[in-house]
Amino acid sequence: MSKKQDNDEFDQIEDPELEEETVSDPEEIVEEEAEEPKKKPRRGKRERTEEEKAASAFKHLTAEEDEDRPGVSLRTILGGDILQGKWFRRNFWFICMVALMCIFYVSNRYSCQQAIIETDRLMDTLADRRYKALTAESQVKEYSRRSKVEASLQDTTLRPNNKPILVIPVGTPDSASTAQ
Image (cartoon, rainbow, N blue to C red; front, side, top):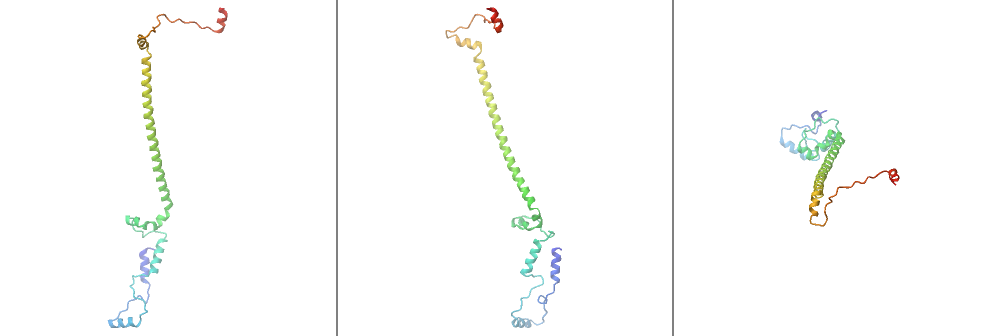
């Protein structure tokens, strides 16, 4: 049943105390009120007692369907009214799982970005060290060339060798024993 049907059924309940009496003379009303001070105050058909309001709120909270659920607005979210609905209670664990997955996604992305930054930094350092090693190797090659060595030895008593290089044949141990 919808909330409107509940209200219509509530309105159809007849209570003799709630019915309005028609009195022609206003002085009679004053006299009746003076004679019966213990009588309950008169209420209109639409007014409800606290117990009826509490019962209605309990039925609303425990209802299987949220047909009369108000639209989602910022006020209902900030006020916490959305937490009372059946939809939220039914999907609470799903919402928690989605929130945990979002947290995991963000933290994983952060750690991956940190790893990429560290890799880029190390690659830059490696390239810089390779360039330095290449520069040092080229300087060593330049200084060890024969022409550079001869130019640096001109001021000293050392002179380059003018005789051709003598090649000494090295034989196997069998040939060495036969030569003697």
